[in-house]
Length: 235
Image 1 (cartoon, rainbow, N blue to C red):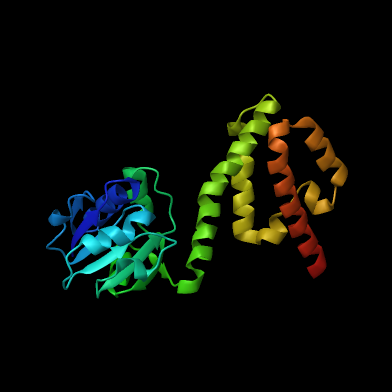
Image 2 (image 1 turned 180 degrees about the horizontal axis):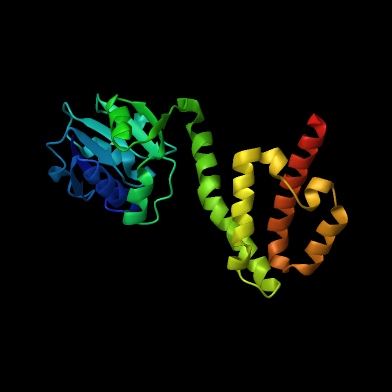
């Protein structure tokens, strides 16, 4: 397939590498050089979400497919093109090489023209389908899974340093927790004070940690107590 990837940021450069390695004829185009995007079978927009409609409207209309990779946006962003598609990878793309590797075999939310499915198949990926009215909720879950996990680990790092240790000392425990969720599910994977309704220990934690970290700890502790309560209600 002849593909023009519009946007040279982290997503665009990752898709450019991954699609080329999958055997497509790919060229990377800057968003202000749209004249270079055609001819192509597919124009893949990897631009900021807020720029999608403007960039799509600036592209000539024709028989090609125009698609985007934004998780929170739908096909309406791609008017006035008749052939429209979207494919959003459930993968973190911090830079081109790492992102390109993760795009192979990833899960993709897809909609619109069947070219999106063909593209996912060429990357050995798995397609999932999200109702248009649920796209924002879908993308919120993706943001929590990736971005908020990083923020959580920043919280762990701050608490570790308050104890005289470093984040690396806790990463094995983080990996075990993720593995337990994958194999046991959220409810059964929960351990620690919340799982045994140990409020006294939580209070000791709050006394010991930096004041600036307490609101984050409290919010997460409440979520953990909710999970524990849900588990007890089903026993």
